[in-house]
Image (cartoon, rainbow, N blue to C red; front, side, top):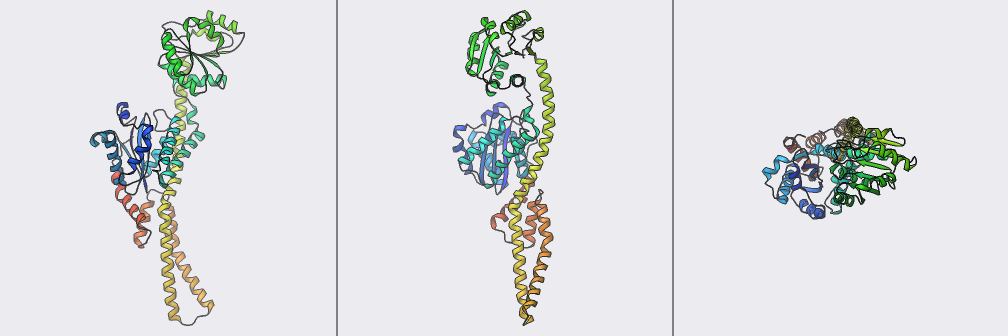
Length: 446
């Protein structure tokens, strides 16, 4: 049973194509069962996010499995296969395993190390499991992948370095005030940056969010999105005296908050600290405001410096993450190859025992009467010969099981000794060795 992964992502397809090829979560169980009925597919999982649509499957015939997945995608979305082909990335065998490990670790994402994909993969697997369309190979693969994703984040801290301006602004607020729940937060502006910031604030646990904008109607719309409250721009002074954090991103061409105004507000606050984060260009807050006691001010250049540093830190973390993935790949490869290696070793040992027993009995027939001690010596010698003869091929096969050539050596041993290891194992070994090289050339470069 071998894994394959076929799909498209933000690198191979535009957002228009990704939208067309996405799957709605409400229909996913029905869709999975439809896919599972295609030829050669023994288990399936569909991962569908805004940046990728990928089908992961377990198959005993790689070529048939790939053909079925492509046909399914074309049929379901009403796209000609030759048109769809130009957007698809095909990953087979251990390349498919490595691809999933990189996806769940955030290394294949638009933003390196992003955390959301871990939950999305977990959810995709859970839906497939509930629909009863997975099998042992996919279960082990996805359970291992989720553990790998968690290990990468724990060991490298790759997701601890925010790399967007809006997210970094919220992280700075958390660093200054700890938990945001219960803290008064005021967002100035209702544009795209303010909207992103509001979403990050809610995700970070903020519960008291005020939105102010010169256009009150726009403030009302954004406030609804973040379960906050719109306040009039003319009443700004009142709310500046109440809140703990201000994140400003208006479209104003001049300073919205001046030092004189802020000095008066801070006097009324009686020493209660305040964090101001100005992510507007041009700036909303006069830089001298940062000189006022108990005021902490960050502008967009401060945030960009943090973002650039975090990009570098994520790249370093990504290198370490790749090393972790290779370690985990070795463990998975060893387990997967053992599915074929163990039956082969058992069949080889059983064949050796049968030959030994038959030859020992023939020898006894020619030797006549033997004492129990003599019989015991002969049997021990025969056991020793078989054990020593099989020791090296068995040891070498176990070592080869940790390499990508493990299946090939297993099949060679089966053929050389004419071993009976079951028709399914023989068939899957034969299929993968015939098709792996051919299919691998169809994979699109990342």
